[in-house]
Image (cartoon, rainbow, N blue to C red; front, side, top):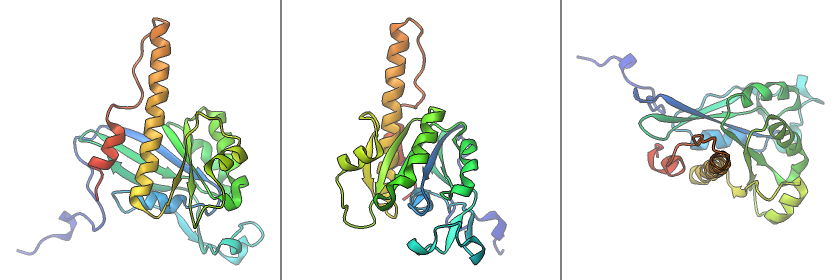
Length: 228
């Protein structure tokens, strides 16, 4: 008897476990062409959903395309998924980088556990708005320098240029590399866990109590449970 194609999962897609009932949301944000779509695609266990559209002459003078060899651009968001455990799933949302789509960011930030600000040191100024909006929303974040070649500046120089507080983690990554991208996410979750622990300690000191927002073991689960 021939198999029914509708009963077989599509290539490149990992079915969501029926036991999954806890969704965690992380947003990847940054300037135009810094590698947000690439990062989401490299770490996602499913074929990522993206809203890439071909850039046309109608966008000349509006979209900074030619300088960076971009032929398409995200017009809404990118979406990926990582299974952390039997019950926990991490959802990744890549924000559009062009200024004319920034109005979508506030909605993408809603309900986000935290964010990754991806930066290109050739255009650090493109990252200022992302950092400003995250600080405005009170959304915890880390900054990841996406290396397109040999870094021309130290991380401390990048921190100084972005005026990042010392408590905000700044790491290197290659958005094209799955393991590198996963390490960025692990760094973010460790940062969120540290913030949650500090908040819980402060509440306990005030006899208020409270639970941590980040499940125990989530950082290691990104390595152990995500699909190769």
